[in-house]
Image 1: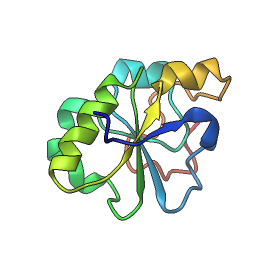
Image 2: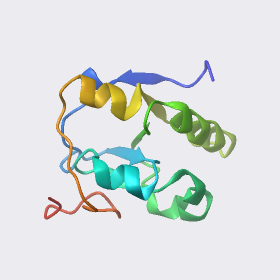
Image 3: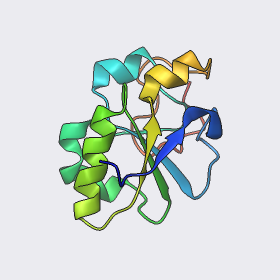
Image 4: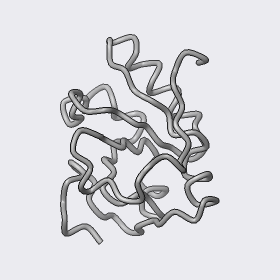
Length: 119
């Protein structure tokens, strides 16, 4: 796990809706996502990652977030074995909220993360 880069939330934008070339992948479960997520993030729960890799823009910088970083690191280890690089958002949504960064609640955009209409 030590080889996977980690990025502090303080170095990330509050909203990934208009972040060309960057993907924030949220791998938490639906109930966690609905309780609060980063606007513009792509939501694919951990267990669905293998079957939904085609929904992730792998040409973009990949950042993975979960509740506290554990699941993010597991996903990144899996992706690394497939030759896909990415970074873990250090501290996950716990750190995001502790740093008073905004969250969006409800189902929002659970697909590509590019919907400007997500509330």
